[in-house]
Length: 345
Image 1: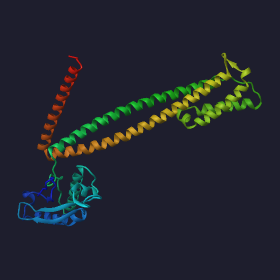
Image 2: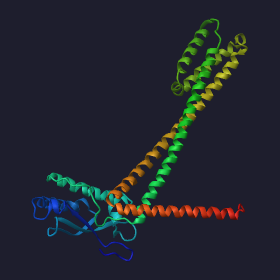
Image 3: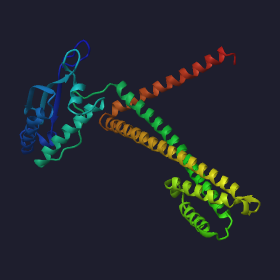
Image 4: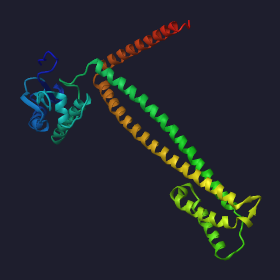
């Protein structure tokens, strides 16, 4: 096909065939079935690909097997400059195949699935898609995919490390909450028994029972923190009235109230920190999932390359090893130069 000065292709060719000379040779009954499948595929090509201007579509029946040539110009629409241009990437994007180098691969897979369904309806099973004309990447582009996978893997490992650290910190905060809850319970158990005086004693006992019930678990503390603080404050007021006549082990009720208030405040602070760390963990989980999706997509591409183009895959690997060796050599040379300039040798 003709290319312009900027290497822009004037048009693209889509080649489609079914079977080989041995199983679908021209003139055989299976070739007639293949011809009908190709005809149905060709009839629906334009409707499936509205951004491809087809100027030639022909089926050849004079070679080994029936095969179809579809020549088209991809049309992209822009808001600035020329509104309509020959642009395959833009055409694929407008047809819903996304951006980037994998868009063309997604389009090829969709077209293969269409042909597979047509053939299946006619009683033919076809293999996975293979490399076709108009579908090629340079060695440098293949190398970039490998480098991108490596970069994403490193970034994913870093996120997983951060996630592990955050989870460890959350576990530490869990233990702190349990410790504070035990302290509050100990203070409540330390409150001396009061002489029965009218309704004050009943109210004190009721408050103690309710606080003990609410402090049975860290989830209960987090959920009912406001209620716990309110009841503790009410209990503190009653205890303050009786503090002049109430002592146990040398500690006044007022001192116990101070310790209780401090422990409740510390528990609330720890609960808030745990909430913040849980939010950070959730965000890291989302980042990790996003990175894994990118790694899976690029890994799928490299796997497809390895199966369909083993020679080019080997060439890419050799080029990558050469590039990495050069980078290591340059890093060593740079380190030696720095040592000399700093007078370390």
